[in-house]
Length: 125
Image (cartoon, rainbow, N blue to C red; front, side, top):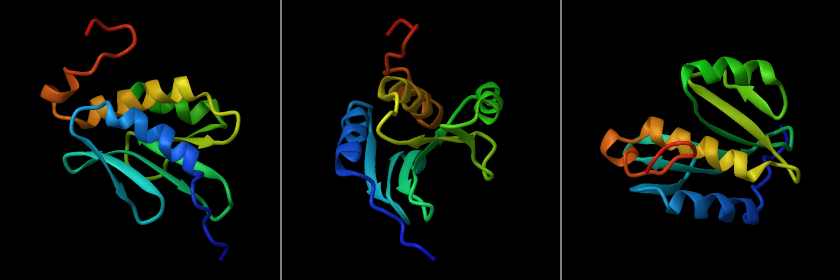
């Protein structure tokens, strides 16, 4: 079985800077890679796969899950969890789009009192 590659540090730092701005969101080592949580809920998990590709998984609204499933690469639906989707990461990743998706994931996982503190695109803060 091939080893899983470490996620490039520049990518982890870029993600870290996003999550540091979200109330009570914290980083921890995952079974592989790094994950960010709020309370006991995982917001996102970034890791390298045995296929040497990098992925980030996160939560999405139910209607968006179906869209992710049908969009194809770089998006995918995870086989576990009804609202878990993901994105392949590479040198062409749309980081601004990913930041919006991860902010939405945070708001789905966080208690409402914390989600209400987050300014989201298209919504008044």
